[in-house]
Structure formats: C-alpha cells, structure tokens
Image 1 (tube, one colour):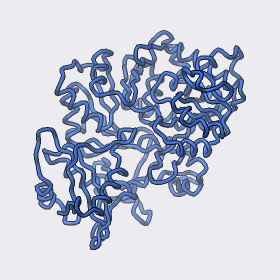
Image 2: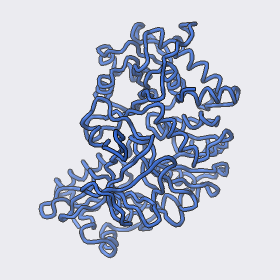
Image 3: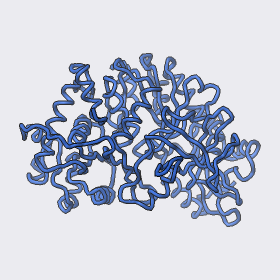
Image 4: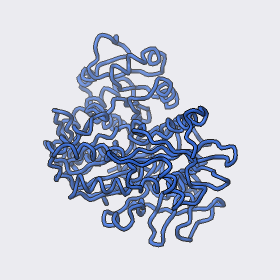
Length: 527
C-alpha cells in the first residue's frame, strides 16, 4: 500500500467504525461518518473537474466541515490549504492567486465580505455550509447540498507518497505569506514521530481549541484520527471557563496548549472548582513554556505529564522535552524528536561542537518541507546542501544553544536579534529573566532605535494579579543580574499582551506601540 495520509482514516474506519471520532458542540461523528461524508465531498470535487495536484483552500475555522473537507481533498490527490478565518481581504486574495486554488470552502460571512474578490478569482466553486439566498447559485454552493450531488465512485488519482498533501502559509507578518510545501511522506513521518513520544492512543480524548489552520491544531486532528482517539473540537475563540467545563464534561485526557492559554485557564481555575483529573498530558509548542507556565500547569492539572516542545511550520516539530526532565531543565526545549537530527552552525557555516555556544539551528530529517510555493529564492535561503548529494537540510533562522547533555535551548530568531550597544542581544534571554521575577506574569521585549546605542530594548510587562512592582524596581533586578547591554532602556507595565489568532504574543503590534511611545515624548518612559 502506498503511504498516504488518508490511510490513517481508512485504518481507523476498519478498526473503530462506530467509535466517536469528533465531538463538536452537541454533535458527535463516528469514524464511519467522517469517512462517508468525506467520500461524498471527494466525489463532488471530481465531478467539477478537480484533479490530482489542484489546490483547495479551507477557511472555516474549527468546524466539522473542516475535518470532512481535509480528508476529502486528500482522497482525490489534491492539495489542502488551511487558512485562518481572521485573514483580511488582501491576504485572502494573495493566497488564492499565489496558490492558484480552484475551490474555496468558507463560511457565509467571509464569502459575503469578499464577494467581489471571489467573483473575480479563478475559483470554480465556493462551498459554504448553510448557504442562504444572500449568495446566488453558480459560483456559490451549499456544503450539504454538494454531498448529495453525485453517486459516482471516487476515481483513483494515482497519488504517490512524494506528492504534495498540504501548503501551509506562514503568517506573513513581516512580508508576503510563504506557502510551506509538505508531501504525504512529510506529514506521515511527522505524525508517527509525534505519536511515538506523546503516546496518543484510542482511549484518549484530545481537547483542541487551537486553530485547525495552525499546524499545531491541524496535527491534533490528524493524530487523533491516526490512533482512533476522539477529537473534542472547540472554536478558537472559546472562553477559558468553557474549556474547563468541557474538560470536566467530556473527561478529556490530552490538552494541547500555548502559554497564553495556560495563563487564562489558570486564572479561571482559581475562581471556580472543576474536576480536571482526567487530563493525563499537557503539550505545548508555538512559544516556549516559562517556569511560571509550568507551575501553572502543575497547579491546574496535578496528574498531567508536561511536554514542552519546539518547532517550525517548515519541519513541523524539532524537539521535545521529556516530562521527566521538566524539573531539571525547565528552560530547555529538549532533544530531537524521533527520526530527526539537529546541530548548530556558526556564521561561517561551521558545525559547533562546544556546549552552550549560540549558533543557528539546522534540522535534518524526513519532516523537512519541500520548499516555499512559488518562491525559489526564499527556498534556497532555507534549504541548503546536506550530508549526501542532492540532500537538503533546513536552516531554521533560529539562534539556539546545546548543553553538554545534548539539550537544546532556544535563544531567539536571527531576524529578531537586537543590536544593543554593538552587541547582539536575544530578546528571549531578557524575557526569561524578567519572567522569573515573582511579580511578573508575562513579558515581551522588542527593539527600538536609539541615537547612541543603535537599538535599545523595550520591555512590555504584565504583572500577576494582586502583585505590585514598579518599572524602576524591575530595572534594578535586571541591572543586578544581567549585563548592561541586556538591561531594557524602556519599560512599560500593561494590562495584557495582544495575541495573534494562533495564541502567540503579537510582537508586531507591540513593536509599533513601542515606536509610537518613543516618538511621543510625553508618553515616553525612559529609565
């Protein structure tokens, strides 16, 4: 049998046909339900001329239709492109044009807001759950209606494992979005590697409130299907109190989370009593867990193993910190995931052998992307010659260090390093220190222009509830423990740090705020 991602669904349908695959609100779908409905949608795709290698964009958010559509696209050898519902018209237009997509599956509000754009696109169909008369027939069709449009069988596409399965567009916050190309082989290897150390199994209930357009969320769905587990799917915007209630009601066993989610759940758990003992594992990626985050998890979910992980869309996952090492190496993002190699190189591309020396992280393995869609120059910057002829390895653009035991420590993005007083400073290192101050809940450090230093550090800080500390007191802590060039020149205590749709701190928004504060002398806080 040729390895294809849809094999995961086929196998689970054979083994657990009537078991619950997805819970979404009050709806419960078995593996057979998902398989039958995705078959019907796949037949419709082929009836309108969708062929192997064609691109289909999914912009539905966390919904049953997203799950069904994902498997339907793969069944006909097409390429799935999940994107966020929060995208502005210019980003939607860019992705549709760049990918050459011929089908879009989205909700009615998005379709109406972008109707003119969609009518001018090269799309054959826009498929909409619960389409009303506000959108005429022709280009726009109803999701449930198309499931019953054809009785034909799915025609074999001739798909092989090195065909593309997905294009996942990066956020593009610093420029045009880049489409990360992933083959069936890439995604199968990543799924099997993740399952091997996370240990998901058919008895698990995985609570996913992470966007399915975000690869961390998408893989929760793929992994749950692959082992016959139940995916308890929640909308991305669900309030923390409802997540806690859902854990208790469904007896969820796995919680994938990002640090911002952990903070919100912790605050709610202090106000209400829930039985959360069913959670056996909390996983994290997207942003590193701090010591404070780890303590919050232990407080909320005392029986849970904690998996701190690190990765990039370009290779899915790089490392994980085994739960038994969380106490001894809380600042580490761990060791290479199974079936992956990693090392560091210096600015001259020499492999670094000395422990605790900062260099660029390089990843080698079958999870590494094929490149960026339509961007050969950007691809050549990231994928460079590897160990064997014609092999490519991923130059991540991340500064890291490896300790004497082989554990990795993330230090910052190469393009986010701040040149303070002629010395490169990792914002992550300063954030980690300030975050260790007991009064501090969260921190983000960015760089701003400085007439004497080139760049200066600007720290935005959120305090823990009922805690009090002044900006000058924070500077005193920093001055006593950090080199002078790592001490923030500017500090502002704020109520909350803005988030991206994926739950990460929105560094771009705060960068703009910092620049504005510097420009407006009456609002400037100079230390």
